[in-house]
Image 1 (cartoon, rainbow, N blue to C red):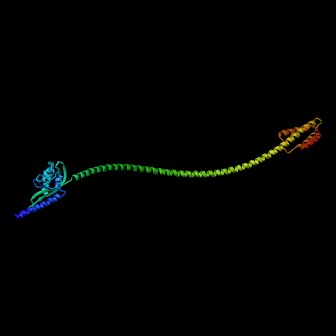
Image 2 (image 1 turned 90 degrees about the vertical axis):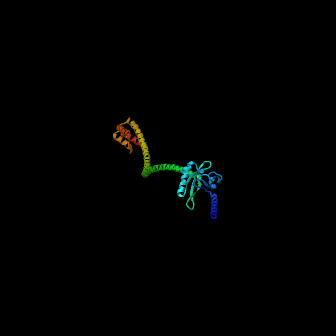
Image 3 (image 1 turned 180 degrees about the vertical axis):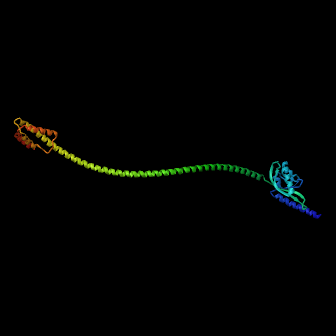
Length: 324
């Protein structure tokens, strides 16, 4: 009997130690029998479900922590699986004292005695409301990010498509520019050749112009020389003309006086032809006579032929001597 009492006290002491430990942990703990009656809950469990005192829950059924739907879909199947396996972990939904549901992550263990008989169910629960809220936010954020990624991907694909189009356009533009550059290079080469040809033509033209200028200068010098010679010749001819005019005027004057004198002498006597020739012989000069002078000489000779030679000869000699 004393042994039984000692064993019972030892069990009570162990339970007391376990109770103290359970009260100090932050994890919610519950102990229930297979009828569902609550044997123990710690303060964390009571607080999690909206109760101020854990003692008020002793002896109540575990359905105070669940609604009917939760008992049917979550709790009963979970307990049955624990009885079959011995322990089980998984999500189980609870309700608070005010009826607000909240999610938990449960670990339930089947406690047996030394003979293997099932005695109690020990449950450990963690409120995962914040975790689920965080997961929901993460899920929404992930969905949002996926949407953003999808949108960004579409934008990038569109931008890539535009870029490809621009690259194609740039390549086409580059090919066009290269063709234009080749055409411009060819045109530049042709222009350079034309410039070279024009420079050669310009050099030839300048050379030809220099030759022409030299030739013109030479011809100008020749013309100047010819003009000087012509001026000298004109001056000389002018002097000769003046001299010839003076001689012709002297001859005409002498002839006029002779004609007068002959007319005077012809009125007194007859003159022989030979005497007339002798009379006019001294009148011959190296100066050529004009047609009028030749006619005058002919008339003079005919008239003198009718006069006396001796009278004409003396008069002519005297007249010529005065003139010369």
